[in-house]
Length: 195
Image 1 (cartoon, rainbow, N blue to C red):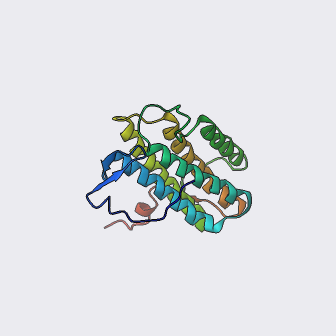
Image 2 (tube, rainbow, N blue to C red):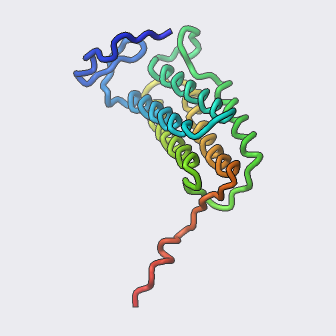
């Protein structure tokens, strides 16, 4: 169990922060960027959950906890991904997201166009979480070019962003609200032609 008795330590005043193994890294490091983006995705989900209830809210609550697990995973560098004393993302978490995507996608009509965020507030909030999740994934892929990163961590972010896309569509469908579809070149076609 984590016990925090003091919030500020002044240890980061020199532009460095500690990882889970005690090593100190610059706050602008790619690993810290990725961890920060995971935190942002979690915060975006917290806002979205202000408009959810029931089983859907419970699922998002689990996702928030898993994102915190992912942050702990990324905070612990090294290549010993199977160590039982380190919190790591596992293949079952990725597989569960895939099952949840498939289950919710079954109720949705086939896409006729790309969709835009909107229709309901919750839809837009889930899209914000999705785009932050995609950024976290891109940052983590960049880290993986230079440091050992568990493949499950990258897979989890990839599936979560897909899940958030499907869930944003499902929310509008469940509420009986039409999706906001992309209208290619709509702005240009509304501009009067110069004479």
